[in-house]
Image (cartoon, rainbow, N blue to C red; front, side, top):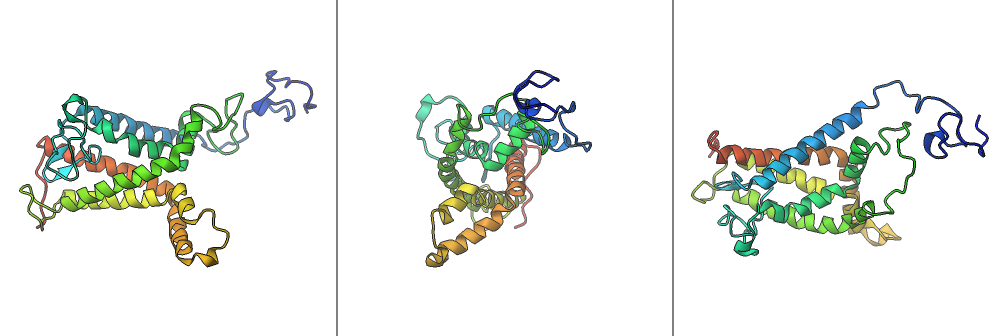
Length: 276
């Protein structure tokens, strides 16, 4: 056993799994299961979404097919937007913005997800191995948590939550507009309408299951008995919060599928099946 004052005889490191106060055990961990599978799948899934969303955000094309506008591009805030007639779009940035309109809006839902408590755990483990799994030591010699730049910026999560609510509201309006035909007449429903409906339901449940939302509703209350409405809302949000990981993945997949569906329609791969 190491004494606590002498360096580890294995590596000479004075921190981490080989700290002098730890037993001088050769292996970094004693797990024999496939502990690496979960962080590997997480990293692969997140990387796939990053690659896809980056391609679609910079494509600046094939994001609108009446009456659908891709959730990656809504609302369009520049006059180069092909969906200017659809939804809450406005020529806010004018003609000087020559890049993809998606780059003006994606920063808000992206910032919300990047600073989300679940996504932090996911990419900390999947990409930074901090730590890669329970009972598996991280390879870093020092750990400063989220007290230093750039990770200290994770504290802006609650502010991104407010923007995420606005974006979810806009996408709700887009979902309502999807129940029109290509001539903007109401009372129609296509396959895209159903996909948009599922997507916005998942986005709202993921957003409301956020830890910041739970704190906003029920935090700083000393007596729940004096605030029965907030207590009930806090309980509902708490139930959603128990499924935060599932909702995070489901909403991530659904928003990508909604965008890809609009892409297929816009490129003429097939026509939107209309039910009525």
